Length: 346
Image 1 (cartoon, rainbow, N blue to C red):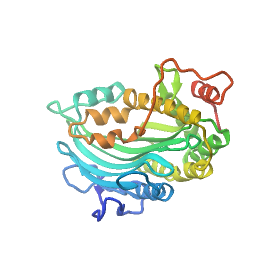
Image 2: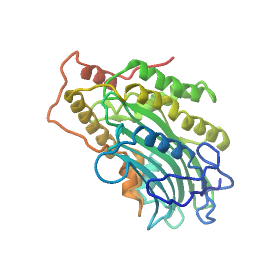
Image 3: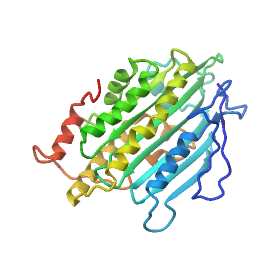
Image 4: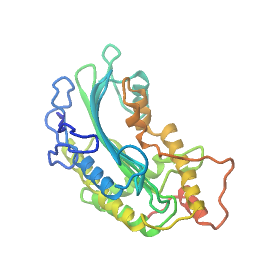
């Protein structure tokens, strides 16, 4: 498989104008070889999400622009990407979408982590060339009645000592509400299930459980949110079939989330509800910095762009000593679901 980043020059930091190949997420041909310079990735999903962020979060307080789009490249490794970030908007407190295409050599620690997941990686002279590419986004709304949403879809390829290439796809979409709204939870999961069911009826229940297990904050005994779907190291039944599945999941992001934003973005809220949102965002930070594979891999990659890696963190968060919500409160109801995940659709 062969990828090339295709972007139009940015005439303004406040204007996002990526070239789209019409693939919906990735367009590929050949192999993912960093040497030939023909890696190709469509930014269609990024452009779609960025446009929605700008439309819903246009009003801005303070200095700067409601959104900033930056094209970046890696200093020590190959590749680069585009980061589109909105901060302190009317609806979204902080939101970003990042497209990246990175190549280089796996660090010893990164290779060790992959081997711990069952990868048999044979290095040549201690080196493992890799190529990774993907699109990711985290959206942190201002209103505590609008949930945070995260998605990430990616492709990874490693060349072993004998020239053999191992490849796999990974990704997922998940929701992190501050307050539980069962109707929203059903809509979110139902939309993702429909995307999965187009390919195999067994995928949604498998990847829903994987999501609940992956986003587990072990030291808290809680999930980060109400889940969604998550998968990694997927390399069968075929490259093309997995790719089509990934595209279906990526296309489901907007319909599973934006209706929820529109429904609640003007809801009234109290200072106490805002405080609870900040406490839950503290949990979000804990998961991302302690457990998240993507964050760990990025921080272990020489020359990686730290701002893009930490784009997922909320603008503000809070930690209070020994905070426990009152029994039978809305906050306690949320905690119960985070401790004991539910099946939202059947």
